[in-house]
Image 1: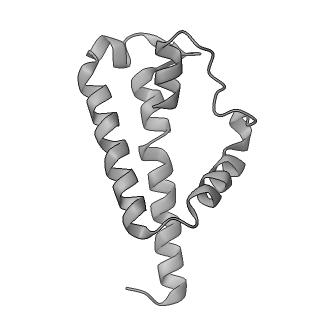
Image 2: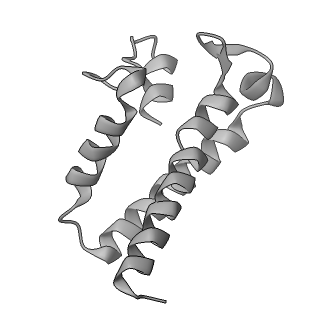
Length: 107
């Protein structure tokens, strides 16, 4: 959402994030985890719902051409960039949660 907001205003975007390069996504993920470490579970759920709502609204407002048939960043269309930054990290996190639960004996 940040990337789209900046880019739609004609402002420069630091991909993937200011201070990070594409080969530092693990460090970026750690920053993300630290940022939200002290949040209460209900607050995290509310933030997730808000973000999902905003993302789905964005996707609904765009045409297939805008999402997949034109380059948005480097060689990637916007739809692919959305996937890179939503479902892919969530898949990674699900694996970590499963491993954590298994190690803690949680069903």
